[in-house]
Length: 341
Ligand code: SF4
Image (cartoon, rainbow, N blue to C red; front, side, top):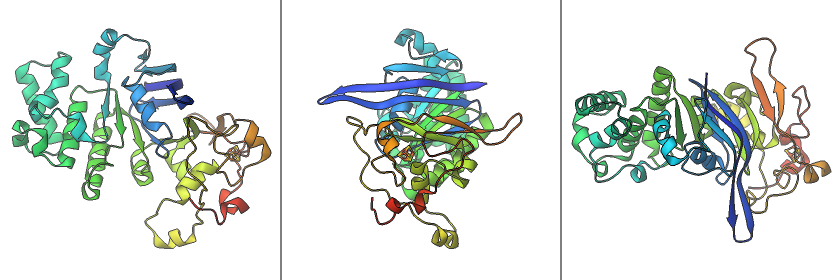
């Protein structure tokens, strides 16, 4: 069963100087019980995809199907009963928890809004959820400001899961937390996801986190997906030159392996989505750029990763990746040497 299907999603803004194409034709699918990691630099449009999925932002094109229902065209009134099926966990829990409410009220609020429990049942459910996210029951009567950042993010997760959603969108859920508590919150998310089997769109720039949590990974660059593959295949053999560069810069735990790797250093910053480069958006930074790349945008093509039922697929948008998946090594391109970020 499919928890989320996004088809040709667009989010364009009018700004001084033209149209910002923050999201420009993104398609992705998350099956029930699957975690899709959406990665890319700040400004790539990945958070805007998440906001459109939970309808905090209105798409300008395309469709978003949650549990089979297109939520892009529904009125706020028609959307209300469906909101229990998809929840967002924000980057900064302080901004998403009402400071005047107690923790018990915060966690119980979705149950009350969706009429899924009476007062007594809701209170019991809050105690269960607090235990499930590893917090003591006495915290229920406190306010958010009395808790640490890690505890507040655990409350956000408990609140999001109170109504058993089919889909959780987690937008950089640990990046505002102290490094010392990031791993424990990620572990909690992974445990809950495995136990409850909800689909999860995990938006992050943290490659170690996405490798740990995600079943599949989609890589975004300037509003478009440039590569999508099962996590293990993407990390073992990235095909798109941008993915190769991202992964080459990520630290690995084994110092011997780290020393043996060649780093692909990209020149320049992410271009503005107000004036994206022609052809392949990545051509201004790509070590393998050819003349064709400057004029012709590469389509996102499906490459087989195996054969037979259950064989996974990989999608790549690059003119140089052959149909059998062979690809030049961006680290060996002359343009990759000596450039700096
Ligand atoms: Fe690089 Fe060209 Fe491939 Fe774009 S299409 S990633 S510029 S080689």
